[in-house]
Image (cartoon, rainbow, N blue to C red; front, side):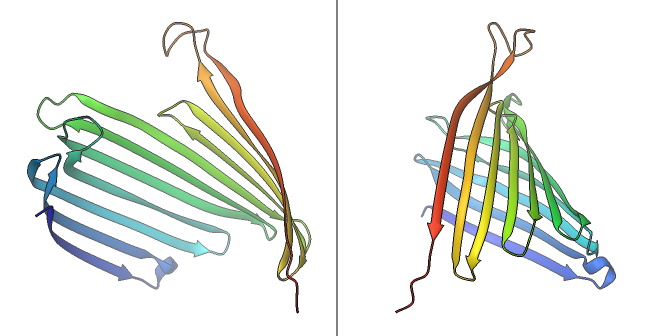
Length: 203
């Protein structure tokens, strides 16, 4: 046997602000790398709401005791996972989506930190005309000190024919001594340009 799971969930939908709630409890036995982990459990809760057409928000909290399988010998960890997001539409043609995710894992045996970090992400979508739209995605990964910036232009020739022009920019932090060094700089590590034509031929 590799895994045995008991999973309980509760979901609610409300008229106020079109709110949604979801809660989950999971208890499990798992086998990783020939080792038995019998005390695996997870508690999760999330909430989202849309008060108006111009604003929506939500978030989730998860706490778990589970195997951390990255090392050669899996170990039990206690993990805290937090996420939050909000979307705004300042004008009818512009839609802005934002996410924040934080994760922290500590060894259940020693209490020592295994990993900790966060990710910030935003996406701006602008409908310039009926056929032309522009999108810009930005993300910062605190785990790897990595920053991405991806613009994309889309022109819709017809309902099934689309022309894309875009690029990707990847940045990373470097320093000469340690993470808190004054010499830390953000450098461009890779860049890519692309075009794509999607055209429907009717026969």
